[in-house]
Length: 100
Length: 443
Image 1 (cartoon, rainbow over the protein chains, first blue to last red):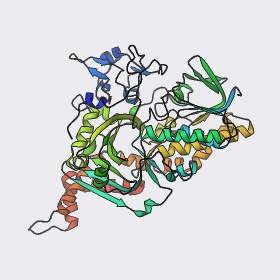
Image 2: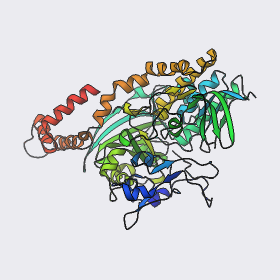
Image 3: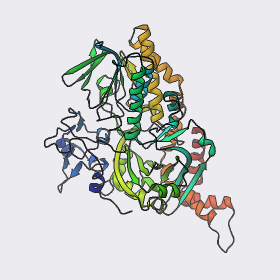
Image 4: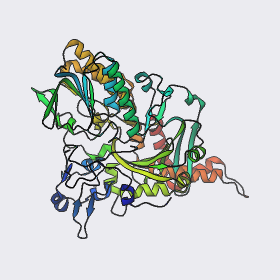
């Protein structure tokens, strides 16, 4: 089998409200904490959906659109930068598994 | 309709649905709310539902088009090093007996099927108009009055009940809200499962894995699979797909991975092993998924599994055991869901939903195999987490395998000498003796 990139992998995932322009996030990340107080910035390598990325100067950026609601960041972050709070299902994003 | 339910169940996974089925059969009025578009829409597992309890909830389920993929007839545990695979393999006609002792499932389908069974049970109950499964509903919070749960708030609406079963899964925000678990749960006893569903032509799958009818294979992997991270791999055969993935400890990932080795790179690494590659040839990835899972360490359990008007079931209570024999999460969810419902039924009879009455749930769970096994296999959980288990042991096993199974035109060493040689190359005799004693005691 040919190796798949994370973008190709995420391309197999179905999301709810895929067409919604301004979906409400279900995770808030205080990246100031990541960028000033965190020595590992582990969300950028443990997140299975690559929602946390590092820029060229080593700062953490977060986007929730690809999030598959696995919960990894909720436990992996030990600096209190990550908080989860689901919006109304009509206005949020999130997965809809075809297989699960 | 009465404006108050006997019980509100939060979460339409296996724990919540098992509780609902039990309540429906006992003519209780309940509301089950699910955040996803349908039961199973947000759920991921490896996954095997172990044990035969489903047959009590849905008698003769195997006679119908049940929601499972295949039953477990063939089991394999594989040690991997870079080049080799050494397996312990067990296949038995004994596993063909119904009720089956293990079902391979895909949650999006299985949970939805089980929800259908709940709907049927509601229709057959004394209150077919008064119990509901409501998907697409987010519970904002559990309503508390004087320290006691009285219902749920969802958007602008409130629903009231004598008690609430929280079966929200491992990312247990409501469990934290009612104070049964701390707001911050450390990564130490948590893992992430990451997997792919790979589709084949069904006859290719059946030939490749020697499946007969709806029989299935479960294969666990340790060693090369997890690339030095604490954890292991799995492969389960579904109808015309396989589930292949890894379960990796979160703390170990934080400490041992990097920008050059992200979680999905480890999955790619596992799939690149030649013995694994041989199993995947010609398949097409149709879904990539991931989910947190607790590791079965009892230090992860919430402070308590009940309080006034509240019961916790399934992974919301971190009820899961990976003893090395199997990863048991879904059967624990089912068992705890049933027992929670039984406690609700008793509380209704007494018309008392206080902590004191609901403590019967804890007693039932303690007396069941769930807490008994969870307690007695704690040393096994820790044994599996010893670094040697996913680093040196698979190397020793394969080094030995290579010598033992190689036949060449020169004098052959005796087996004990081969073993000694394999051990000394990758570990030390003393380390292996210590580990052997630990393992013998724990299993």
